[in-house]
Length: 391
Image (cartoon, rainbow, N blue to C red; front, side, top):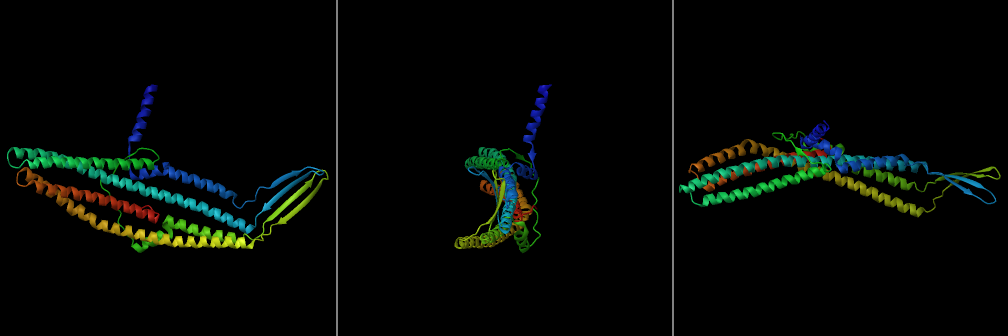
């Protein structure tokens, strides 16, 4: 009975590891297990813990002096309220930056996951086509041998057919290696967990319904995480500039001395006087430079994001015009021409070169279609990354 239970558990584990997952399941698992995401989450937690102490009072100091008098001294330093408030705002922005960075990393990894998935979809289709081509070449090789034996073609035809078989077999091996590389990358993203995928019968791109300028405005105003990070960096630089400018404000110190052998208490209050004005002016100038740099960086990122959105937008629009031509016109016709050429060659009504041309045109057009379709889906996921949305 015990062995039977262990066998069932082993079967369930094996089945769970061998089960194929969809794109959404891949992304969900990625978010849960990716090492980069987990590390970023830990960093945010650490920064949130640090934020709790930002602007708080320093620990008081307690000291004891022995001698003719035994004196207990208690000291407490307090920062200027305005500077303490600014320090807390800067620390709070650091936490917000870390949270935005987490969302950015998540979006980048999601985009990478989609790229792997869509390329694997295309590769599986292309590998199936290549295997089909190899099978057809095997049939045609047999047909060419029969025609050679009956003196209908020269010995060149079977020889060329054999060479083509080898070339296609090499191409198939390279495609299989490319597929293994993508699966290895998927495993890396999942932190070492191997995975296999299920694919839909056909990928369906989402049509673009918004104009370019609307997509650009949405990206830079509310969606793009890189822009949002640059905005936060600019806010932080501005707060830091103000914080340095109030460095010349006084800090305070309170204390109490208790003389044990005299049972007396002495109260003490002090104020720090920042006299080195030149040093403070230098720090203010430095922070002003950092603020200008942050503002310039924000403008640069905004323009770059707009350019990237435009580039992907035009690529998607172009692909949406090309894909129907492949799907509804070129591939059906080239497949029909390839089948007719195959039958004509086997019947001895077509020469070898004409058949090869028809065969290669069909394969090339089909491969181009699946590569273009995968590229279209990847561009769509890249647009999602730039927009900060999931479409």
